[in-house]
Image 1: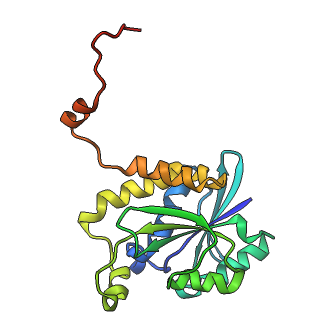
Image 2: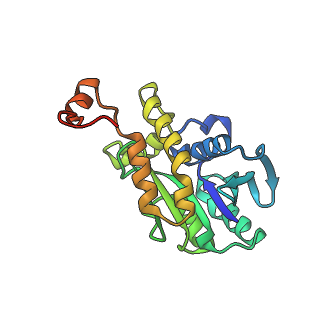
Length: 211
């Protein structure tokens, strides 16, 4: 069994925030893979769903402890299901990646992300994290407003494509192959070539036999 955590703040007023993109991905994975209907628990404190991804049981968690106390819910869930940190996968927003860029690895620091900082304090650093780029506003004084603001209409296409791509590629990460996972996401989210570009790039069929 593995635990998949989507970070964010609870409540409808935060649902569309950049800070909640981890929770958005969890919602898409639950939908795409036919998980059980989400249910709320008071202990561990969060919204949970469960299902199978290629025969592996997955439990999803969206903490109800607010971003800065995410570690409380994650730590309680880890102990409740008797998991090890390396069986936990955390999805979160990343300021230092361009919008739609995705990176994944096991272990590492929190890089100033308060949700990860809280998780580190409760379970250590040996868990998987998926960084989902939301871009940087360019000024550190604008960071809080940036992550607590909803995605704009102009963001809709790349956000939707990113959610779809991660939901498609997530089995690779559950197998422990972060490189294959990020490559698959990048492939699925690359801009479509125009017909002319695609035609120019197509190999010549001269002097080839039909099969």
